[in-house]
Length: 85
Image (cartoon, rainbow, N blue to C red):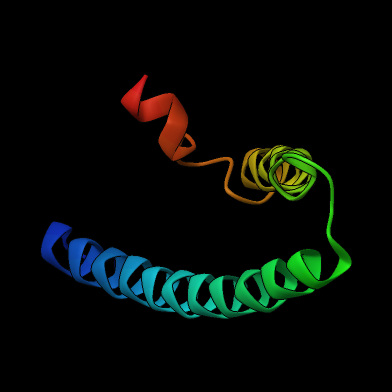
């Protein structure tokens, strides 16, 4: 028997809830790691905006991987940046 619209909505709500919980946790881990690395950069006396430049380069690479992964692994629903654009 096919799922009802309400069942599909509830299943999707649970899926997105699990996704946001994992992303929130990953963000906390990333924030902690960046805090430690910022302290290390200060100790290493990186010149000018070297820490910020490295962070932007690595964030850009990570964003590209996440966008590519979303297009591959979630083909049934457009990636969030496509929806909001």
